[in-house]
Amino acid sequence: MHSNAMPSEASGHAASNGRAGANGLANAKANAKANAKGNASGQGRVNGQAQAEVNGQAVGIPEATVARLPVYLRALYGLAERGISTVASEELAAAAGVNSAKLRKDLSHLGSYGIRGVGYDVDYLVYQVSRTLGLTQDWPVVIVGAGNLGRALANYGGFVSRGFTIAAMLDSDPAIVGSRIARLIVRHVDELEALVARHKVAIGVIATPAGSAQAVCDRFVSAGVTSILNFAPLVLSVPEGVDVRKVDLSIELQILAFHAQRRSAARPPESRPAATPSNPGRSGGNPKAVDERSRPQVTPELAAKG
Image 1 (cartoon, rainbow, N blue to C red):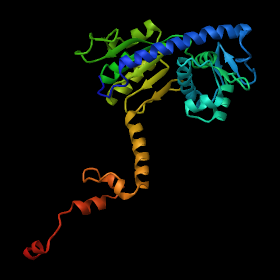
Image 2 (spheres, rainbow, N blue to C red):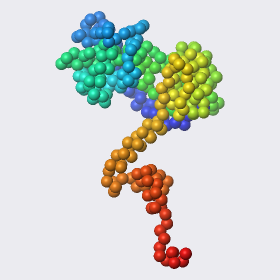
Image 3 (cartoon, rainbow, N blue to C red):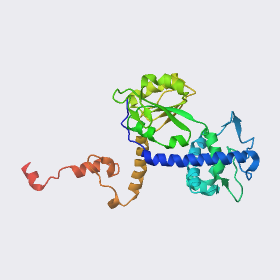
Image 4 (cartoon, rainbow, N blue to C red):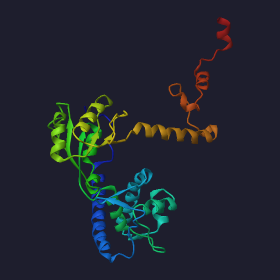
């Protein structure tokens, strides 16, 4: 069942980033407690009309905003690691790759409005975003698929600092079951339901080939898992109430190829990549041009012989 997908970041570099992120989150929590007691400089006040909370978790935040919050959090960690305690909306927006008006609107959903002339308190904003994303608690995760991709995920040190613990790794290959990956012993996929119940898993990761993905997904759902991260090149079918996030590296590469092709078409002909018969797309999408170049030339002598 293991996947042959490309590994992600090297585990050593990832572990270093994970430790730095963990320190940032720890500092943010400490500062957040002070702010909650009223020692903050006015930042972090919650506007009841802009923010609703149910059991401590924000509701009513647009999906587009939710999708940008992890980007803001990554930028905030970078600022915290550099020792920056306050940040203007323009600077944070630039680090996150969005415009400042959009950032301010997104953060207003969290009840965070910043201070005019000062900006946002970095540590407290880390805490606010982390709390909204549910990262102030631990989330046990089960990975199914112990191939190259699954191994890279298990070795990635950045999950722990964000509140994610890899509780188990599963596979069906007898040659892999029982082996050690990171700190985990690979278990057989037949144990999926028992492990989900034992560790109270709410998030499952599918890192299997496409042919196995739907069956694994169905078992996750039957076991009570309601959030699934899918790396398999397949659109999964799930019932209402189950969230699936799909990561397909080949799709991302194809999108990049589209933009690269457009830039190439705008360049002078002599600077464009040379076309080849095996890849007619490199001629600017004109297969006929490739055929003409690759067709043997008929000289007058050969024509006379014919």
